[in-house]
Amino acid sequence: MLKLADIVRVAGEVRPIEDAMLETVIQAAAPLDKASEGDLSFLSSAKYRRDLAATAASAVFLSEKEVEHCPEGTIALVVADPYLAYARASHLFDQRPKLTSIHPSAAVDPSATLGEGVAIGANAVVCAGVQLADGVEVGHGCVVEDNTVIGARTVLRPNVTIQHDCIIGADCVFQSGVVIGGSGFGYAPNQGRWQAIAQLGRVVIGDRVEVGANSTIDRGAIEDTVIADDVIIDNLVQLGHNVRIDEGVAMASQVGISGSTHVGAGCTIAGQAGFAGHIDIAAGSHFTGRAMVTKGTKEPGLYSSGLPATTNREWRKQIARIRQLESLQTRLQALEKKLSGETGE
Image 1 (cartoon, rainbow, N blue to C red):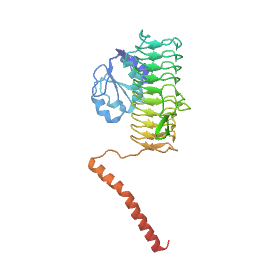
Image 2 (cartoon, rainbow, N blue to C red):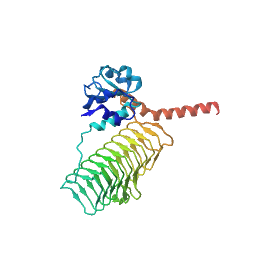
Image 3 (cartoon, rainbow, N blue to C red):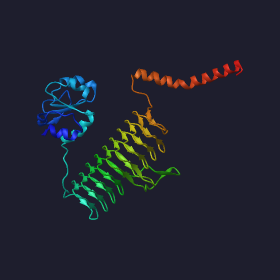
Image 4 (cartoon, rainbow, N blue to C red):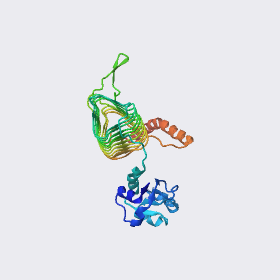
């Protein structure tokens, strides 16, 4: 149970409100249309203004222009960015169980170095030469292989695998099922068979990186795979060997990036987008869902490919037109040639 003063303290700059209001008890966070007394909510888009007018929330983050729509009895927490303010306050309501000690069933090699406040869950394995900085949390069933270094306060949720010699920064979060440092897809053809190529690089990850459940980041073939600071990666994402992701990139679920591709700073990549290998993506490039990226980009901007969903009937018409393009081009070229001959050009 919190008081509104606790929420205001972490939310950022909030327009001053009466001291008595700061004693208001806040018990939970809730959407505007479902909130009741004791709940905190937010309005970040005018399309939900009707929900604001009818809300029973005790307090709402909103912008200055929405104050007039806030109902009587609801405290208006006026901020520059309501969504950001709520994001900061939301952590006060997080009830995820946190490890506070090293479980007796954890296997920790004597040569591993553990900082202050390190917590390790049941059946986790920490191998030889591993370095865990202060406040690292290794969840139940995790495996951290030899000589890996993990920075302060980084959290591995249950069943994460960090393979050997990886370097992980501070304040990162890896959700369950993540595999960091697996072998990249490298094979040489050999008379109808495939000869595996040893993957000799590492994975090097910066600070404040978050990786979603069941995502994989392959180790480099010779050089390292590198993920810079403040990158966020959704569930079920696959990054190939020697990929480089610069600062502040965000990618949604089921993105796949092939080996040795470089993604510049600040790019956003929507779900199921796929990238060919050995291409460079300019900083500030943004890709819509299911984009098929076979060439790099030289300028920032919005990029798309593929056909958006429509009715089956309309889709069949579109495909039929696409199949006619080649014959139409041939006819057009013949017509241009004929006209050119008639005019002597």
